[in-house]
Image 1: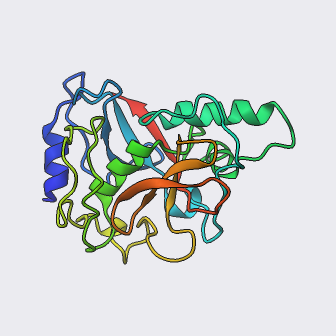
Image 2: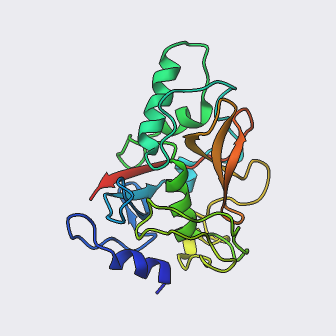
Length: 225
């Protein structure tokens, strides 16, 4: 068994319910891990990553937005709230554009229409649990107080290891893109007027990127535990 999976299913949710195995097909996509909205190690939501064929932007990189500050998009753990704030901002002027967030919010997959652009630490959980490659990890990233269980230290070069979920390995149909043009994944977490956070699934780096640049997008949704 993948040790990442074991750590997660050994941790109880707030209601005392054991969590699914990482990569389980459910809720319109695949279980990517649990998150705590209180940053206390107690799971409050399960994260679902969309199927790659219907919930990603394919080979066409999308911009986050232009160089403008969007109120309500700074949550590090609640991508749904960030995406809702992006939609509110878009509704204020028909000339505004925020392609990454709007793309996710417009999806309907598996009977679910509550997809969103994930927050920075939601993306990090997906990297930790569904790392596609055998590359060394970026040792300046990885600490995540919203993860379940909490991680108070950064990655080592070998931890996390490549996922054992074959569909999400680099040769699988669902793997997170980690090479090529625009391969970094946008999060919905804004940093500054010009920057938003993104995750490089090449090695797990969490950093800022210029909002006007085209990046990869993978929609998430979540369910309460």
